[in-house]
Image (cartoon, rainbow, N blue to C red; front, side, top):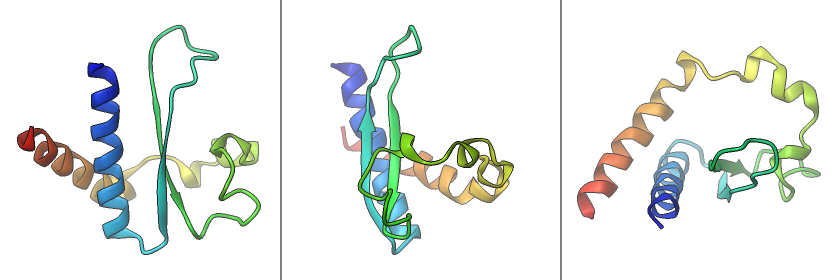
Length: 97
């Protein structure tokens, strides 16, 4: 239950920040797949209206392979505002109990 609660809190933080930073924010997908990794983990995927029409309503796993390996999409300093915002939202949600 603790894991699911934390996942929910993270999803809420991601939603709040993405909604604030991008007018094309659509929703957050929360996934627990357990297909390949032998440990409990979750995926939190923000989804946006500007995604390709043929993919926006489907799992992110259906994006072409080159999108997963292209360095232009890699996490980096350009994501600092997003990362800091999520951390701040998590702190706020934690304090709300």
